[in-house]
Length: 333
Image (cartoon, one colour):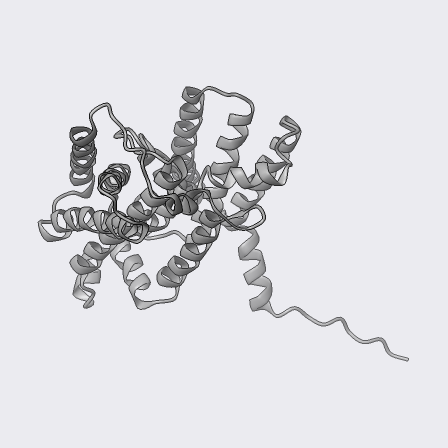
């Protein structure tokens, strides 16, 4: 009687699994699990289904912006005006709400304001070929400055009753509308970046814009579209955040630029452009949400949270560079 030989695993499948286990996304997933376990031991309130649901509000709005920001950074550019766009879109919605605008009109105003702001950035960067970091630092101050001119030290607080659903509503039990919307947008951006010619063009531009231009890729048009996307997603985040808070102040989403960039870089997107994935950004958003929510449950002051975020940003930028230099040194030996 002969025994059957064990079924061999194809080399391609084995290599794919080994590659997945060595990937940055898998490491992030382990970090997310570790943070979750730490939070569950740190405070007895964390494991409540409603507490976990509340934790999703800590990252969904920022992560929605990060989806578009990831594509901009992969292309070799950056948009630091996203929080300013959010503030201006929220202010525009608040002003319209005071004049009696209904919910559909408020949504159109929020997205439209983000689209216009993104078009301004895109025209300056792609059209005039100005450095994106300089342009968006300027428009960051411009957009938020307009909000301060309109509001001063006042706030818009009167919104239609149905508007609160977008930032406070639940689709089913503890599953919030914001979380479902984020997952849908993440799936759409994953397809756009990883399964379309547009996404392949974004990677090509990030790796070598000159070569991409000579290969027939319309670099300026694609960059313009990317800034439009960040504007629209910032407008969408403005709708969610304004709905959740129920008010608009010119200081809304202050310093979110740092947090959005941290999510993107933590997700494995190279700050130099040319590489990254939407899956990594999604997992990084979850990690950021768990970290900040856990610190909040432990009553950690906001300034300490800022220090933690800054340290995370420096670490995720420095570690790959240091590892690369070590590998180069070993290869030379």
